[in-house]
Amino acid sequence: MKIIAVTACPVGIAHTYMAAENLQKAGEKLGVEIKVETQGSIGVENALTDKDIEEADGVIIASDKEVTKERFIGKRLIATGVQDGIKRPEELIQRFATEDVPVYQADLMSVEDVKKQKKEKENPIYRHLMSGVSYMIPFIVVGGLLIALALTLGGEQTPGGIVIPEDSFWKKVEEIGAASFSFMVPILAGFIAVSIADRPGLAPGIIGGFIAANGSFYGSEAGAGFIGGIIAGFLAGYITLAIKKIKVPQSMQPVMPIIFIPILATLTVGLLFVYVVGAPVAQVFESLTVWLEGMQGASSILLALILGAMISIDMGGPFNKVAFLFGSAMIAEGNYEIMGPIAVAICIPPLGMGLATFINKRKYQAAEQQAGKASFTMGLFGITEGAIPFAAQDPLRVIPSIMVGSMTGSVIAMVANVGDRVAHGGPIVAVLGAVDNVLMFFVAAIIGTVVTALLVNFLKKDVIGESEAKVGTNQQERTEEDQAKSTEITNLTDIVTNDLIHADLKGSTKEEVMDELIASMEQSGILSDAKAYKQAVIARENEGTTGMGMNIAVPHGKSEAVRKPAVAFGIQRSGVDWESLDGTPAKLIFMLAVPKEKAGDDHLKILQMLSRKLMDDNYRQKLLNVTTKEEAYHLLAEIQ
Image (tube, one colour):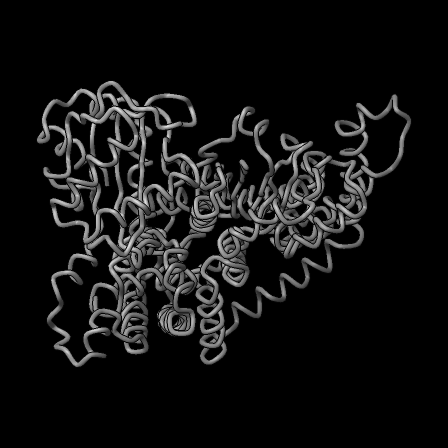
């Protein structure tokens, strides 16, 4: 069975790739061929081809934003949230074998199919909102950073604050930033409508959002802000959807999506906003702004506590996004001291968890220590999702810890009047000059980070040395075998030695080559039982070929007979039939050996390292051209 999948989330930073990785891992475990296309923050990667779609037995769309389904018409299709891709990948794949999954027929789906599809969607309102947010974010980030850059490099201190001279180059930069910023509400509304009604909703949504943001249409100085934009987006989407369902003569059908539907929907949304919706929403927004600007003392501290908790409790989820949108809207109103505490709170979860792994390694497995480095780096750039791996593994200790840290930092920033002029967070915005009161920004972020790290390490138990303590041995002494099994893998050469490299394999069949590689592992002390390990390798081959194509084979086995993770590499110049998917003989053979108890971490990490590097045609050719073990080892050191 062959499955194809698409994963996507509104921001496209963490959840997109976590869902893709877990789906691929589940497919391998179930013996199902799977290819996953990711629609992340840098665009589409590993794109599905027409051939992939034609050959697929089923399609999984795990996304929290709208993904176009037209190319999957006629295929059995499951549409669900990105969290299901992360948490229930095996269940999704198995449904194609155990259930009658409906065939996607675009607008011609049956009533039962529609009901089932709706049931699979966790929260359509949230999905549509987050789709709009994902398209809005680049405009507010670009606009805010350009304005911050202009103020930093071209601004002059005056009694009324920093002012950019009207006739300067930096005034033009500021105006470009302001132009980008002005698209925030129309883009938000437009792509909410697209998520609901597809492309016919784009024009009504953007025009409705523009009207929402410009109070002159309905007698308001401030406009309805982002709240009005959200309302306009949903109005445009559902009105467009209703008009699409109107039955018209066949002769009119071709022009409905490009003429009649957009015109009728735009006119309806515009008039509703001008005469019914706009003024009340604008009044609410103006009142909210006045209230927020008037908060002092205890009330502002309470707001900071609420914002810090919302930002950190779900790390990129709906609570986080609501607080983020609120701060963004306040920037548009000229209130920067709301986004300041939010900008501090955004970076504390990943920075705090990264720091926690640095200061007490005994609390974390080797894989978590590696994740800590990545988490800390993501925190510097304001990516809250960096803390997700830790929260997913130990939510009862991690989530309260990061919430307390974020709330602490947020309160300090609020009391110190830290402002942020761009809709983003983390030290990066301070470095780029977007923050008012930079010193206290860093003080608040550092204190919040330290609070998180100390609290989580206080709550967590030691994971290194626990087994020795249970049997009464000295926790500072570990056996040679234990040390071997906890090998930290950052480069392939961490687990490859010259003794495991064969520049010229002699075997002419798959089994002969495997025997040759297994023998070198046994001689190097990797295996306690060569026969048992070989049985594990053959069992994996029986599930499906490990011939990846492109002259590559990656046989692997997970067994208790393996003392420590290792890879044996060999080159068979003539090639061996490995039943590869593309029919090419295997010339570059990587044999993976992983202890059974480490299979989930090391096995996946090694395969990921190999997969990324071996996609490079030039690199594969260099490997084929080596003549000595030393040359091969030097090239293998590039795999990391």
